[in-house]
Image (cartoon, rainbow, N blue to C red; front, side):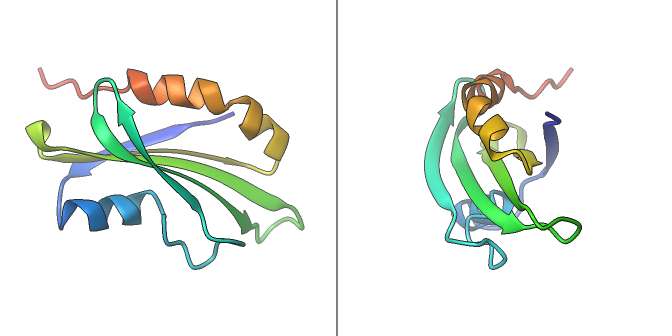
Length: 109
């Protein structure tokens, strides 16, 4: 299952930005996203969300997991995400996703 991550310069109020990056208030979600605080070993405290949304190209729901952090030390906002139509697969991968979230770090040579 593909998992993506992105980093950019931090901007805006922390909590508001994390909610946007984690899509915690996604108006296109089928039901309100499940939003939890998440503390990664290397990136610190952030948000984790899980939500379902309709997929334009398919009659199946898309299950989406996102993590977002503000890393003040580097002046950066970080987001990690994945999505799939295979809901059972994303549920089985939950521990692997969490492990990956704990392993992310910012390397600044």
